[in-house]
Image 1 (tube, protein in one colour):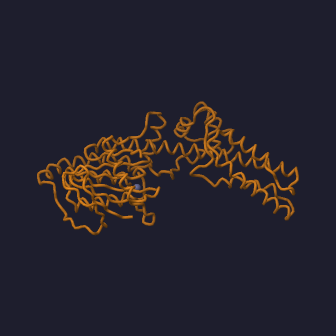
Image 2 (spheres, helix red, strand yellow; image 1 turned 90 degrees about the horizontal axis):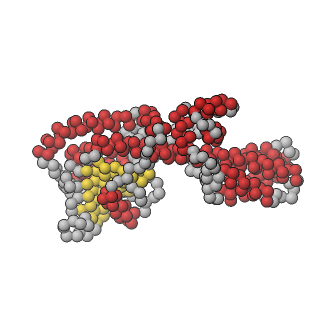
Amino acid sequence: MDSLSKRPRPDGCEEPQQYGKKCFPDRTTQPVSLISTFTCAKKETSNLSDTTEILEQMSSWTDTPNSVRKVLEHLKSKQAAGDIILEDSIRGKFLSFHRDITDECSIEDKQHSWGVIEKQEEVIMYGPYYPNHNNREHSEDVVIRQTQELLESEDVSEDSKVFIFTLNSPCLVRNTNPCMLNLVQKAHEWWSVYGVKTHVGFNRSWGFKGSKESLFRDVSWSQVECINQSADYKSYCEAAERIPELHPLCETMFSVTKHLLKPGPESFPLITEQGPDWKSYFRDMHCVAACKPEEEKKLLMGEVSLLVETARVLLSEESNSLEGHLEKARAFVLKYAFSSHVCDALQADLRRAFEESWMKMVRGKYAEFVRENLTEDFNQCTVWLCIKDIQKVAEKFLKIGKLPL
Ligand SMILES: [Zn+2]
């Protein structure tokens, strides 16, 4: 949906106008130049030094491996990191625009952006825009383009304000300029040319690659176990050497993971966003049917499939400790009624095989849970550090922060 709507500002001094909505190309307003020559000249001088300062400050964020290292070091140091929340007055405006936009459009629960230009006498809203994966366009690309077009064609003054909402914080890495850097650059340009301040609000900390972050892919169940049982990096490396096929993680990764893991049994859900399908953990169960005559094999395979499918009910359970998840499955399989053609000995084999596969799945899910939490902390810290850097140079033309909805 690509829409633009204009309405009088609620606190505007003009007569309230009829609320109207129009499509983008249908604009009749003449392009305007608002900033006086004097202001332009004054700004141009300070502009050059500003631009250099901004480029210098942001340059470390264009070097992804370096900034990833910086974030990990911060997490390792256990220094505070949190969310930078927009100040109350800006948050209030965003929330009221958000209410208006969601009232008028059905917004899908996926990445999207919208924008608002608030002028003295009216408010122009545009969006929501979604990413276009076919041409690798992010929703921020579209909202930036529309803002640019509007600023060029609308009658904006230095009292006007730009508000840009993006569900996920602007990305920090992609095949072309990342959105976070584009926004800083554009906000500076809009301030220099039109004298307007930009406000950017986001709801989720996306970090560099969001949920596709693969930094923690080596944090497996065995790694977590080994880290949990080791007091420090030295003892971890010694323990890891004794476990076949376990390559020790680097010290930073060890410390960051160790810091996240809480002592004592942790509760976690069996339904996770990432990772393989839960049924894939039960493939080994079909071994019970191996070496059996063809007819019996078929029946047993059917029996295994039915048992696994019936166990699906256990997945809808709430978070539980590792032992709690195992206990539930034990009770389930003990009560499970096999078909009469499965003899007692085979029933015992199937129960044992089920418990083994279930244990592998629970451990796999626990590792996924740990990886998801590591990724979330990493993404939050990334956005926090990046915004702190932005604030050092962009305070006068850009306010950016999290917007709890
Ligand atoms: Zn982006």
